[in-house]
Length: 386
Image: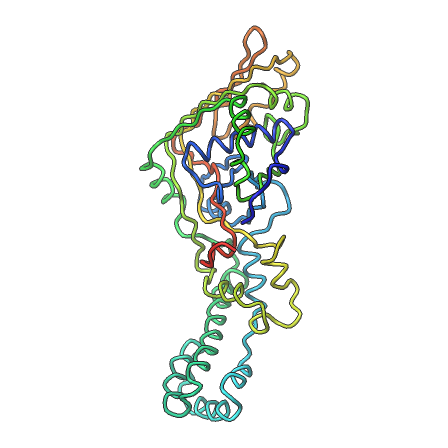
């Protein structure tokens, strides 16, 4: 994935504060800047469907992903759209083995009783060709194997798209996640934004992130608020001190379910020609896998946390109207987790001078997605860095 330059560093206060938070999370939890992406808000997982939905999202090119911002596709939809367009016509076999061999093979195939299934053809052809056409045995078997691969992939998708339409699943469910999180160790993060900002100004390693230091979709002080509102800008510009304790922290490997065939996607990525792509496809290889395409990166794993106890202090002076607005909006969730009152206790308090302290606490047994490790499509498929 591309790295950034210093010119791309954000300047508005909330986005800059978010970048400080990102840096603290990555450095103190020993994560990788070339893959990690924060989730904003941290998504509460309470069932299988919600857990799988998080993994099905296609992350944008951003260090922060707000999944509630419209415009992002899903892994399943993008995969199904191209898998159902792939073509491996049986006639193409004649180009691989020659017209004469193809005719003899068809006659042999017609004498088989019962007729073999598509998945049986590669092995059957290998046996036939080893006797009657050894010079094309490898090419013919490879062609039939591609056809069998496509047939299996389409049958798997049929279950989700046509026969019994239902949401795509990923390996492991909510109960498995709870078990994993319960056994995971805890972790802590602490930083103050002023010191973090000076550190970043003195170093160039901030440029070495997979998303070129881009932070799209950042919120303001509370969930869904404008990051450029006066109170959010005041908060982002202040000295923000953060102390966080995670009761549990675990990495969950994301593995698609039965709807997905990794060999087929590998083949489609590796070969943009016809076949496997149809003539003049729309969308084509470039629109899917090329720069700015709809499936240029995918989620490789989720970073899950549970039992959050966070204290956030801001040295800005908040007027009574601002204090009232913050208290009234706290139930929606406050920076940096934006967890609503459905799963967290958000308690903003103000001292006599107007300084603010926020306490956010979640009960154990309410796992949250802190972020994800995002892999470029080449890396996801085992091709290595582009």
